[in-house]
Image (cartoon, rainbow over all chains, first blue to last red; front, top):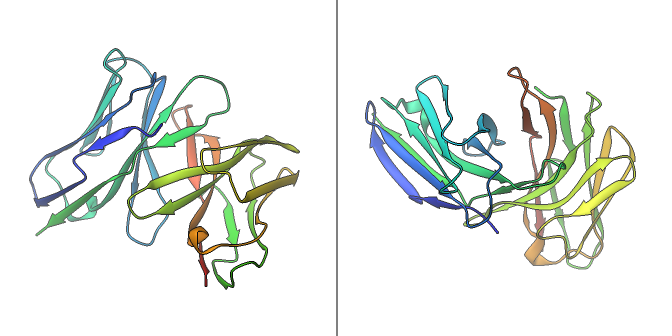
Length: 111
Length: 115
């Protein structure tokens, strides 16, 4: 079952902040975040492995609450280059590194 | 760059014809995946492989088969293409990133149109 992402779309002005949420009805062992620009392949941003852990990538950070089975991606002082579709990917149990992706959140940053 | 190529990059085919998409990797990764991407659905796993001749189904495997006879090649076959299989297909591998965690890297994608 796909994780649920919210919001589906968000429009920002350069310099504004945004939060993208990812929740799962199934157990989350780890969460991956990817960004995909139009017409391109998804690109790995970060992986969250432990409950409550936060990671960062430039001005993008994320948290993972294992108990609530939720992850959030925080984009701070957004830049035009942040525009794209963001996907979270859930890894369940097992060892085959099988990812189930959410449907994505379209982020548009305007000047 | 994880050394992943896909061929063809674009293909138009007719309903009922068989189609094979190829994914090639140069870095000896064990795990390989095929996804399809459609508007409103995100990325959905079709099949994956965890070694030569070892494959398993994903969430949308009906109408697709795969084969992996060599580590570097993972083939996706549509036995009899249908219009519902019009999509963008991505191949991916799992590799170890700079921080030592397992990350998925995607190929450039194949745009398939079934008329």
